[in-house]
Length: 448
Image 1 (cartoon, rainbow, N blue to C red):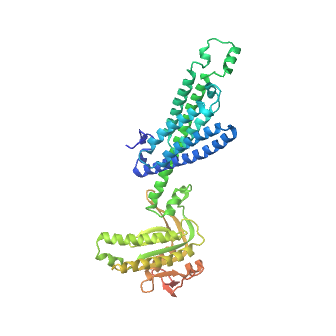
Image 2 (cartoon, rainbow, N blue to C red):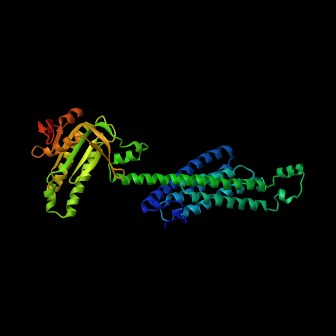
Image 3 (cartoon, rainbow, N blue to C red):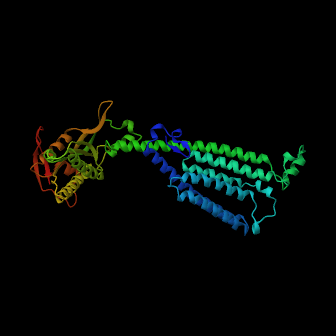
């Protein structure tokens, strides 16, 4: 069971989130919260410093500016050590020092040349207590409800101690010490410079407790939202390991319930295959064959995703990709054609690298076609797959097979026309008519 700030993390997190990866992401968010709190304090101190220069006479404002600087230094220590193992313990200690410093600054009169002739009891009557509550707001930025409750508890303890010490001074005047008073006598006592009223202190403390509880609940809700977001991102990343990233994104979007509904769309379909992989893998260990296949797949997927393509599926020693299948894509044919040439460059460089290392070179064949297909989910209620079906898919597969003896990239004329011709700086070796096995008629194609 993971512990955090002295409590079991499972009391705050759902059971499924207590894995190391989820905990690390939540921890990173809290660390970033400490950094955000430090930036918030920088801004707050800057605003208060400007206010002190305007509202407080010289040289007393120098005293308060010095205190503000000390307050800033106290926040820098947790910020600078936020990624160390005991950063949160230091944060808790600094919170006590923060509250003690602010309380002492409010309740204790300046000393020496900064001293005031007003009785110390008057220090309890001003609105400066609001400055203490800023510490609660700062604690809320860390995504830690425990820190909010800790800060509120420290404020209540230290403030009540400070006011209590002033109230117990021999020269302090209070209602509780006077017995029965008439209204005018009570008013005279209230206006006495040495008067301290416990009622105002209790109002401050009760308000602080309620404010702490409300803020802790708000932070807890934000934390749960953060956890839900972490889970969603983790699920999306896990899903992207099994499906194309754009499919994972589409499934995770708000429109996910409607995703995969059958529809007709113009799509470019690409088949890529390692020529003679069976022969290559025949004399290799299974681990070596899988390593070769993984290298092929990684290079292919990186190139396909770069050109806004979708990995439809891996096909043993090959793969099938679509362009414009997940979303309507006006330049699907152009992106697919550019991707086909880029794949040639990628796999040629890979094969040359293998040859330089004394390994067997690899030849890759690519077939590409463009036209109207049906896109949507296929499968059962328990197992679904988003794919494209139609004559275009069959033709693209046959074109890839027809590359043997012709070239490495075979593109239908329909795809070239839809793309507006070959990409700039690229050329087809020749054009030809290809007979598609199992299909009536032939189609015009271009080969590299």
